[in-house]
Image (cartoon, rainbow, N blue to C red; front, top):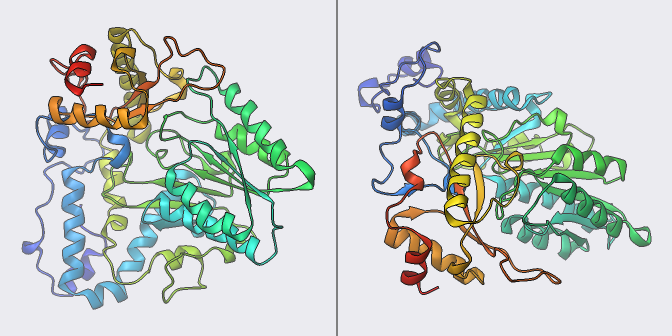
Length: 447
């Protein structure tokens, strides 16, 4: 897993003996990774912790960390040569790999950025300018789900509402029983946005919501947007690549972002932003302006000043790691989904509760109802339980509070959910923590 352009590397007088050791894993595509090798790849995880929250920060294998360190050292050894002769070539190589993985039409449609938050700022800055410059009318709408990621909501506030745009919120039902419930609420929001002659200028659709965690029928919603005349569609798919199939042509959105450090094994932080080629493409800009401003978003994003770009450079090594698993990324995805549903149902059966949505609306994460005696009645209660599980039972898992809606009978209604994850390093024992039951948690956390 040496960096590309290795002949150039040697020609410039670099000494390989000072680089981090190569990973022990074979790079032969015919050699599938073993269980012991998986354990070795994640041996740097803190011991004694049931780590069932891959969704928040992901997990980077040891071999990829070693590859990243080699790239970092290569820059430090001769930064001028690396910057002038190698950095942009390697970033282009990484972008080309992602272009093929997501089935984009052209590599120019793929930019590498720090994270989904950066991508949201790029898209919403673009929309905000359209309002500020009069291309969109004051009061025209942006539609988003009520459970959109907080950074996206803040970007809407920073760029869109201050420029005169209005916001229409789609209330996601939860718990969910079918995709039709989502579609119905989405149609209502679009109708509201188009009332009184207004236009919906942008729809922001989560591919996978964060809290609560649900796979959204994005293809259906994008199609509805096209039918209803929504000008642009931005899919926030922070959790998507590596956990659901991603085909940007089939999805049909104008903008699509997914983090590569969550479910694709990259080191934090790196994400791709897909922008379908269109007449407005030249108007998209990175919010950090540097020397490449005006040369296209992908080129702008590839140089935003002196910084560590190594997380973008290891994508070829990451794909090599992924292909050590049977079935590659699709095989990993299917096994994670199967395992998390099994673990979720095991916990729900033990607690006398249920999953928050059908299995086909889950991914490598699932929402599991918590026992009512835990009395999760506020966001503060949810955070207290999360801290309690970490401090007293060494379990790392997010807890969600689901507020009782108007006209709902609160008697027996589940207001607390655990969002469990499964990744290749997890084992059944991570979900069976001795002494961690609802009665013990309720007593010790004073909930």
